[in-house]
Image (cartoon, rainbow, N blue to C red; front, side, top):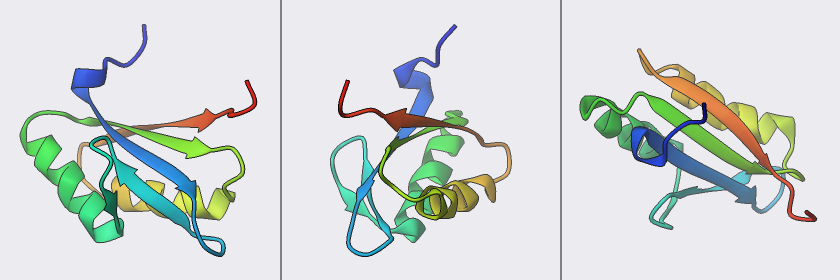
Length: 88
């Protein structure tokens, strides 16, 4: 079974300047790592414990890992990483 959207916090990573990722929430707002943490914590308080990190394939592993590490520091969170294949 897949992960249901309403039970998941969605974070999207796109190629930004340099080696960093530009981070977006599901509502399209661009955010930084502190805002990602706050948003996930707010969703956790509403019993949404799963986070889907959607990343463009061209992003470096390090850029994705930086966001994943921030999310992983939050107690009780379970996260998944999906790679966006723009060519398909």
